[in-house]
Length: 356
Image 1: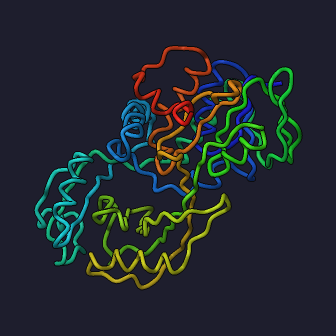
Image 2: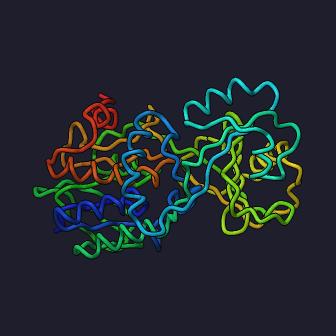
Image 3: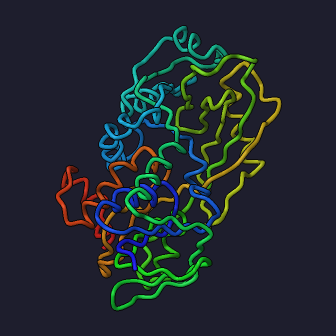
């Protein structure tokens, strides 16, 4: 019998395990052979605290001190948004939302020399960092295990039953019992809720594809910022000597082990090519992940309205890594009955109670 039984071994579940391990015994159940197999393992890995809806920004800003305190987790990247003719008003709006400053095209091309002449305006901010997602995940896992927590892989959930003392969860690795059930199952959170007899909240997974291409023109791209087109119709980011480019699509999907759609990928790469002088000649690899959102697209953190021993840590969308320090701390504070440093307004905006 464990105090906190967590379903899901992505960044949401593992960070929650680390925080809850200070309050009692924790067991994490992960369906796959290793942690972070799905969305967490396919992240663009950027910490941009001004990116997202107001509740997401609140969590991301509150996560900053923790992320900066972790040795080698963050490294400087920067963020640039690019506009062509007819897009300058939209650029100004997006730059204001993300606290980016206008820069000249000479400054933009000094940073990224392959930008072509169709780009007429750019905005840049240096308050964006790469996240070493594996290091952050392993730091949380080490913390959980150091406090006696157990992380079980190959543990796909097949049944959930309410018991006198809490919950019994049957998996491929055996049956586990816990006092509080924490639902951090990513794209599968509504399925887990239904298995537990809890009302699903209406989460929707959306596919997002990625392609890894060689460094354009043989440039040293290690210092290039992450780049977006206005409206986020594509983005590109240096990664381990190559460039990852995404169509930034949001195609609704059922929960599954996602893969990239060739046509969607080709269309996204074509949109990226409209901004640069170097064509894409080959792909090194490609993949896709599912970004799962609640009906209002903000995270859901809190006790279920009808079943208080069922706790939601869900709907991270594309913001799981940059928000996880504050999100996991909030989960532990709520479960432990402690006061949170977050505002009452932010906590309410994340609560499952907002869905009635």
